[in-house]
Image (cartoon, rainbow, N blue to C red; front, side):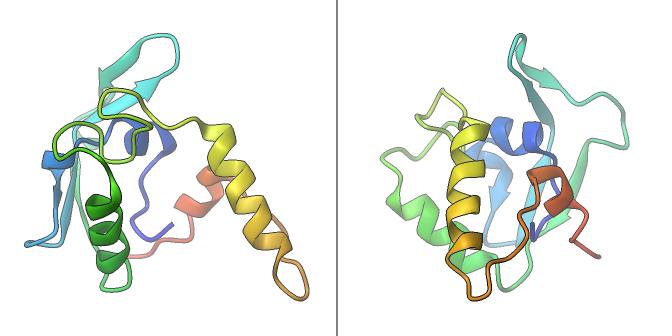
Length: 116
């Protein structure tokens, strides 16, 4: 939501591409369920995204909580990406906990909330 990355880009994001010192995320890979990790489709898709101030402490905490240093940044394990349905359920729970409840949006819609 804060960086504007696609779901497959987040699934394939490696720890080495999240630079919290420079506040940048380097997008080089995508993830497809059937094929696994693949290079992004176009030169324009390979890009560097800024890490907004509000996102940096969240990413830092996430990195410290994981049980590995190298591998997928948001993986279930260092070599296994997150499952999109798990993310949807966590998001749905958070939206429904608001008073009044928020209208849920998907990961792709979240991507469009980012501005640079």
